[in-house]
Every structure is written in C-alpha cells, then in structure tokens.
Image (spheres, rainbow, N blue to C red):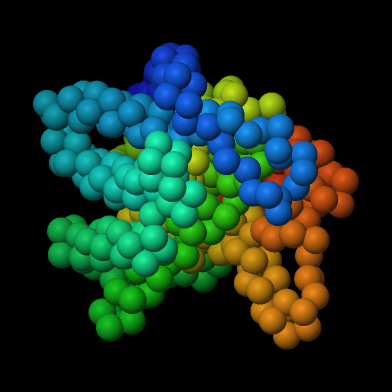
Length: 325
C-alpha cells in the first residue's frame, strides 16, 4: 500500500513535468483541436487548442511501469511480469487513437483513420488480450457476479465474444464521453481509482500498482485539461483510458461491475444510440445534441457544472460498486 501511494505521487509529478514539456511541442507542431461546425457554438473558441495530449499519459505510463517492474524484479518478479500486459493493452488502444489523431491533425485529413480500420485495430488488440487472459494466465473464464459475490465459470464460446464486445464497447463509450474540458479525464480517474481499490481489497498487486500509476497520471493531466483546457487528450487519451478500464476490469474478473461504476460512459453511449434511432423513426431529435453532455450544455449548463455533476455521480456509483463486490 505504501508503494502504491508513492508511485501515484511520482506519477502525478512526472505527468506535470511531461505536460510542461510536451504541450509547447504540440503548440509548435500546430496540433490543434478541430471543432465540429454543428457542435456547440461555445466550442468554436477552443479551435486550435493543442490536442493529442493522451500521448503524455502514454509516456508516463510506460516510464512508471518500467520503474515499477525494476522495483519488483528482484524479489517479486511475477508481479513485474503481470503488470506488463496491462500496460500493453492500455498503450495498444492508445496507439490506435494516436494514429487516428495523427491522420486528422498532422496529415490534415479531417476524416481520420477509416472507421473500418479503426475498429479492426481495436478488435485485434481485444482478441489478443482475451486470449492472453485465457491462455497466458490462470484466470480462465471465471467471472465475478456483484451482489451475489460469487464466481461463475463461463463457457469459452460465450466468454470470448462477450469479453471482446465489452472491450470494444467500453473503449468507444469512454471515447464518446470525451467532449468537454476535463470530463473524460475526471470520470475515468474516479473509475480507475475504484478499480485500484478493488485490486487492493482482493490483494491483486499488479492491478493496484498499475491503477495507481494511471490515477496519478490522470490527476497530473487534469491540471492542464480542466476548463479552460490548455490541452485535450484526443482519441489517443480517450481510447487509452477506455482500454485501461476494461483491461483492468477483465483482469479482476469483474467486467460486470462496469455497469455500475462506469454508468456515465454507458449512458453517454445509450444517448447516442437513442438519438439515432429516434431520429430515424420520427425525423426529430430526442436530445438537443448527443452525447448527452452536449444536451446539458445546450440547455444552459456550464462545462464545469457538467463535469462536477457527472463526476459526483461516478463517485457515488463507485462507492456503491465497492459495497456490492
């Protein structure tokens, strides 16, 4: 526990330093935010704000994980080896987001990575990680049922597609949550911290260590991402954090807990689906704009107010989640 606190604080400090170095570089490269013309008019002033800032979290995650592995390699080599796959799945999703951001912002192709290629990349990483969980660890297909507090062994034919679906759904849900200064970072930080606490409760050290690294990185990034944001995470950051959340939850054998603690990303996704379905049926919009945080924004809520409310909801649901495991 003492090491987790130290590495969280170290991760926070390294993130702040890295941000101070990377943000000016992004500015010089003119890697600026491109706002949708059909988006909230208040967002137009954000045009040009450095984005692709998720690369900061990638850099810090790699540095801090290497340091953690070195620390544990002498007497707890197994823990060091088990942290690496968590890092790889997280960074893997982040790289897909980075490619998308790079095409949009550096190559100036507003379409970005083709949706089919993007989904294929996310699918490949998901399949490799699920196979690793089944074959490379002793976790098997056991899945924890909250409230009942029991483990059940799922058949392979069900577990593999279900786990892949959860990975793809979670990463895209977090991606949809990103759209207001500090919203995705704050919500994800709370969720990751909750998963880290679960790792501590169940004495799964690799989760508590890696979760602490990411929590510290999110805290450090928030200093520059809160309204008015000096940097945006882009798809690089949102896919990375989504990958971290789902990767850790599957490692804990607790993907179902995401229905509770990740309710905000879930409802963001549902709002988009409802908007599309309702518009196709009636020709009208159910919400002023989807995802739902834009609906509240266009209803007169300030960005900081939306972030505060969504974060408080997430915090309350995480507390509930900790009580039902």
